[in-house]
Length: 491
Image 1 (tube, rainbow, N blue to C red):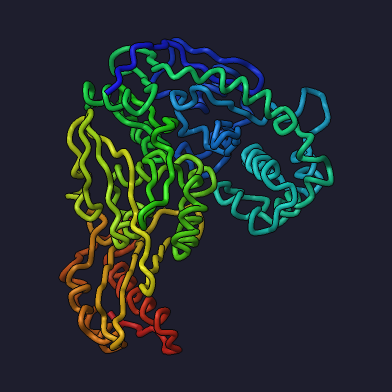
Image 2: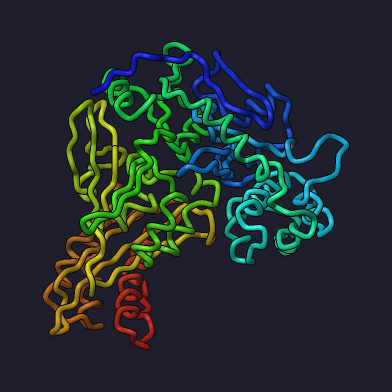
């Protein structure tokens, strides 16, 4: 392991057009608190403090693949420590005091896209990010960009109309963030010196490793520290549960954890690859996951959250583990210089407990590509369609032999147990049997052997069991093209 000897005791980033250098900042300080309390930039609002409502949305620009990419994030759960060598843009930067409104703002005004106005700054920033990427967006693109922004009074129709009209008020290529992108990129790049950042002391210490080897060295020495990547879960530990989780090691921007490779019949993702970064390659190789992928949180959550973090947190209702389990994914764990591979199905041991040793972190996730001729699907059930946590998530994979019998079956669920888990008994009831309705009805009887779901605020145990059985029936009908109706169980 290469030891990183140079340490910088200053956290540096650009805020709008101001260079920020912090030598004394709490590890758990959020960007929203910094903006509102210290910089008096109060356009970003606190609505939920958990990354759900989007009222605090700002843009963060970071180098991605040689370009400076701006993405919307929720400032309420974004920690200051994650912003080293980034460009933060708030709504105050869109137009000068007493100057003309920005095209996005003017469109929102003219198309009556605001009433009480509390959510409006976040909506404007989400539409701003979209407009820079796509000056003439389709309705579906606008709706996707607004998944993470809740509006309680205006309704979305005038906002969508405003989004379509932005380019009539100005050209995206002339916007300062686009026209001066090269100069801004040079400023941001100059901040990336490859040094380890350490600010604060004791439990209030924040650390940004210089590279992955440096991370391995730091975490081996301080296994009690909290690793923070996208903070879409960890942020709530602070804002909702008031947990003391320092010292904190920020790993989300380590280049060595952002690689995406397709080789040898598999797809390999670095642990810090975000949902947004992975979207195109995931949906290319696994088109069956297209719907699921764009129902993971809202746009801001997909820009922040990481595949590795979703796995490492071990939530029983995490979106990606059921699908990755049935695809046969494995993770590479690293502790110092030592690495080991663990099948994802074996990683989850019990609620809140994973097969991860002290000082060990997920370095990458490897997903075998689906062999030709196999059927695969994943379904997510929620109370509301967009930006909601699963009540139940089920993934299904089968291979049907030439004689019409099941040669292989893999089924996994989130929300049915204390961990994401395979339905082993259901699988056994399918293998070797004809892939027909009679076999499916015999197999659904095995669900109670595999699962004893609980009732909670998201769903009752009875609902979860019935829904899991009906998802298997749905999968069968979709793979056979049958016109038969789903069998309705009577409790």
